[in-house]
Image (cartoon, rainbow, N blue to C red; front, side, top):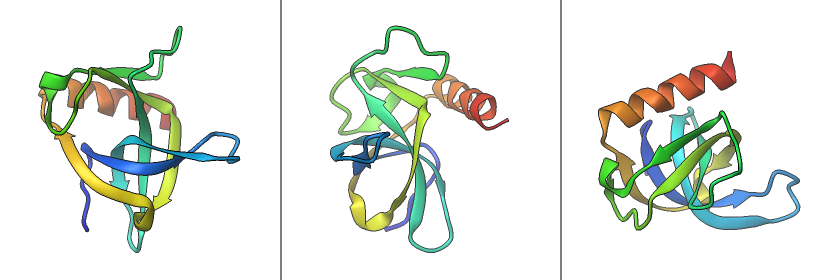
Length: 109
């Protein structure tokens, strides 16, 4: 399966302490050569404050996105494609895509 930036997938996403993993949606930010992709966590729970979040409204995405959510760019993981259950949608809204690119620039530079 191939992935593109802005795809939303259902994946086994590791906790930051690597003790467990949970099936959850994630935003693809880069498909690497080989079998890995880089993703950011998506959750419906808003952190009390995070300058690294982008709101993701249901209507700004296409596919099986059931709830308004938040993309967290301070929770990034490199995952093997084997832990991706399926692609569930993608971010279609231009303004949201611009916010995603701005947060990626903020966190990676």
